[in-house]
Image (cartoon, rainbow, N blue to C red):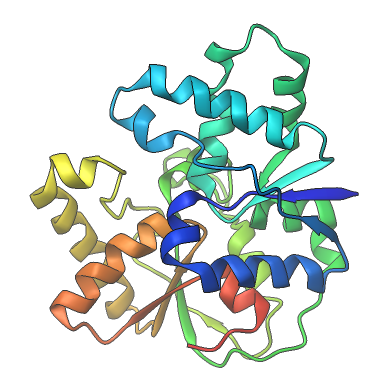
Length: 249
């Protein structure tokens, strides 16, 4: 299979080491990975701000860039959700878009559901207590974990992958699927509410004695990391691909 690696624009600019860890993680599974240089923003920030006309140009470019890949994989649930859920209005049942829509995966979703859990092995050790933050898009749109309001047995694709890492200890949070308060431009328009929600989310991890907060969306982790650094909290954030790729804190 030929896989196109989609890297969100803010991660490319602010977190290049996590982008490299994503590539390393996929290459470690023996996969054929390509990084198309014509890619750019998926348009999510503009969509969140109501600038839908600006999104169309980016959507067309995205489909043109990735239409020939068997799979498209990205380390961001919210960006994947943007493509899958909000591009259709710009394409009139276009075959290229339909292919892209069904071919794009968040990286944990791809490893768990396409490569399959039983085919994945990690040889490295990560001897830390880790709390998993389920971002809203990944959790309820991509179904990376079971939403608590469904009142059915809980399952988390992120935890299933992390449990294959040697010596890791996953903590149980009081609220497994609570929002961190980031919400893209919500954190700018409603700063006070956003920060309060972030502090609550961090406290839940600290109270559970986690040393690391991980998740599949760097935007959420970035939001919490800013609060952690400002408040000097005794905890760190790491994107899940770093842990799965063998990066130490």
